[in-house]
Image (cartoon, rainbow, N blue to C red; front, side, top):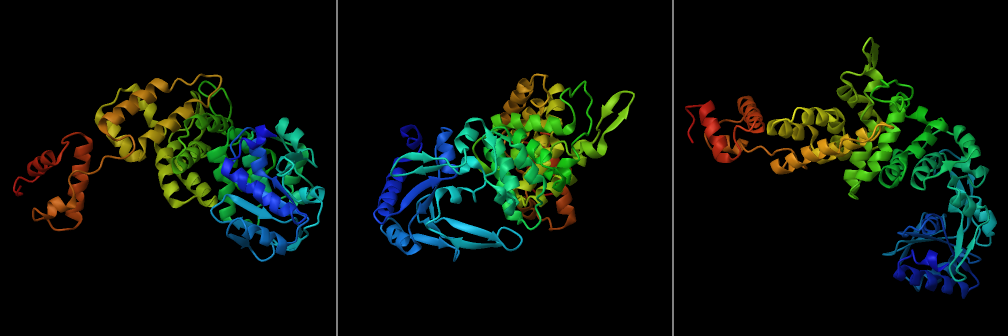
Amino acid sequence: MKQLTDKFQEKHWQLLKRLASGCAGHGGRACLVGGGVRSALLGEDVVDYDVEVFNLDAHTLESVLRQLAHFSRVGKSFGIYKLARWPVDVGLPRREKKKGDGHRGFEVDIDPFMSIEEASRRRDFTFNAIYFDILGEALVDPLGGLKDLKERRLRHCSERFSEDPLRVLRAMQLASRIPATVDPETIALSKELSPEGLSRERYFAEWEKLFLLGKKPSMGLSFLKDSGWIRYFPSLEAMVDCPQDPRWHPEGDVWTHTLHCMDAAVAYRSGDRDDDLVLGLAVLCHDMGKTATTETDEDGIRSHGHEKAGLKPAATFMKQLNVPIRIREKVLPLVKCHMRPAMLHADKCKPSAIRRLSRDAGRLDLLLKLFRADAGGRPPFPDNSGPAADWLLDQAKRLQVERNAPSPILKGRHLLERGWQSGPAMGRLLSKAYEAQIEGLFVDLDGALKWLRDQNPGISS
């Protein structure tokens, strides 16, 4: 098991062994379970740890925990303890009886003397129900999770899967992260569930994992369609069967293209949470406008104006997911501008066009990542976007606009210092000055003031 424990940070592993020893001293058994075990088995570093303690009552467990760290108890009856300053949650086995809607609609019965086999059945998926006995350094696999993990199959633990519909979205993000196919029986159970009663906060937490951690997002999104849950996201469902001209999109409809783009975008993540969320959402939403603009004529299938038309369904989708406003505000300009990099490169555009694109897109570096993911979503066509993206990024860096729109050189305070009054006339002049700056008519304050004098000969300098 050394191969597994090597994925634990040493200080965390030492704490876990102290915890397990303390529990064993009172007849208890402490086991790791859940995502930490799964990650270690996949060869990934473990960042947090869920421990389930058997054969120990709550009072005794609390006395053991006091010897290790300060802790807080989650809720009044859940039997979960969070260790302060440690990425460790400790819990007691429990039964949950559904008594109402939503994830809070459960009656919880803590049973420290429950068997591991019974405890495993309340978990979501079999490879999340693999236990690792900390002191014995041995795996306990009551539901065949090891085989499922090896075969990259996502399978529910029991019929209790249906008690929490959020597990459908959890299946979506896990299918993309492992990546794994979803067992047909799990798909069938998912079809019977609906997101009614789920909080918007819980929605976004699962989608966020797909955008940030998914190795193959297409597998999670395909499950969303197979399970029927795509109908709860109309902006996505509309892309299914929306045709594209096979001369340019041999891969198929807009939905199929989008799945390929999502997989291509994985290569362009930076590790910055907000940037990667913006990129993932922009890629998923970039062609939503085709559903309202696609037409067929003698020249083929066309979607004129789909960039702008995509703003409304993209905004609706992100609001439904409870995406933070600061993220939404960065995604929509990328959707609107996603066709422009190819055109600018083809024309070998002037610096003014690149400044204008930076102004309109907000983040030119992210737009070029979207451009590359879009180009990578048309198999069997190769991704030939590299030269265009590299050229545009090089030009943007030279102009210092790759991460920010050009900052206005001429500001209101400069006009106020020269006797102007605040009001619509000043606003119009500042807008005109900014356009002149974008066009390259001036590049510093001296040039801006000269431009101002040329526009208004009577103004003082």
